[in-house]
Picture (tube, rainbow, N blue to C red):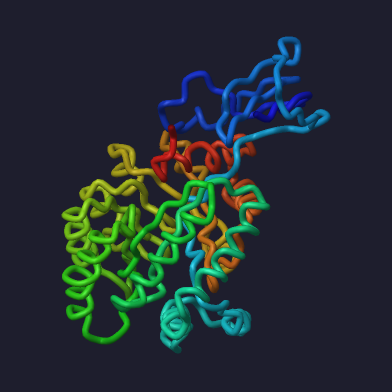
Amino acid sequence: MKLFKNIGQLVQVRENSQQILRGALMSDLPALENAWLLVDRGLIQDYGSMGNLPSGDFEEIDVKGAMLMPSFVDSHTHLVYAADRHEEFVMKIKGMDYQAIAEAGGGILNSARKLQDTTEDELLEGATSRLKRAITQGTGAIEIKSGYGLSTEAEIKMLRVISRLKDRFDIPIKATFLGAHAFPHADQEKYIQAIIQEMLPQIYSEGLADYIDVFCEKGYYTQEQMCRILEAGDKYELKPKVHVNQFNSVGGIEAAVENGALSVDHLEVLSETEIALLKDSDTIPVALPGCSFFLNIPFTPGRKIIENGLPLALASDFNPGSAPSYSMSMVNALACIKMKLLPEEAITATPYNAAFALELEQ
């Protein structure tokens, strides 16, 4: 066992933590001053004030007044990919927006072409390196999506890589099937049928995914297409965690709530009506401020979400093009500077509420 002692502040100490924190409760950040923490094989066993320091055969670590807080939970990433899309950075500087880059063959389709030519072992080594670096920056649990395959073979390859990461790392890792990230060719119905009839059965038989995702947006998947895919996923016991309202509101939030989505992620565009829909649901809003920063698009109205009594989680959206950073500290800083969250609210949104967005609250 490890005994951390002389902790200046032990942050996020809650005797009862069964519920996600909503609205004004997100600014309540309890901390124990001058504390100790006892850990056994990565799990907290006990804690208390230094005046009541336990004795025993422990490995003692004197943190000399430092603050200890829970590690970050990153509930939305695209960590498995073949190569960075650095060439698109200059395209953005020259004035091309996300959709224009996609129409020029960049974006998701660019990543898909690169991934299809990359072996599973090569993908694993790249993802392993990235995940190690994310962990050194404080990430202690993570969700990873497929979605850069856009074919049965390549999507399965991505999900197998995530499964192998679960074997390599001790931290909790959740896998999300995002075959509906873009359309690889003009025949949309043919590809949707491939998702439903080919990919989902194989994913289920191999136990490769925890969740299912769809990019519901103009130029990508319509509300009706998303519902069909989510309903098919439900038959294979995959709960939705979906991309909605990144650039436009096209009914994605309504459909996500109707389909019992665990979370709706992005929300850079958000109406009063959609806020009301979320207030009447158990679906968790997840903001991705890193994406807004790198794409130079509006930020999710986090202040409004909290003031309407909703919970809010924050995630990195780490990916090779539109959000090339896994730093959750940067996510917190952007949430405060650009979304007007209080620091306490940002810290609540990342280690605490984000755990609910991955069903890791226990």
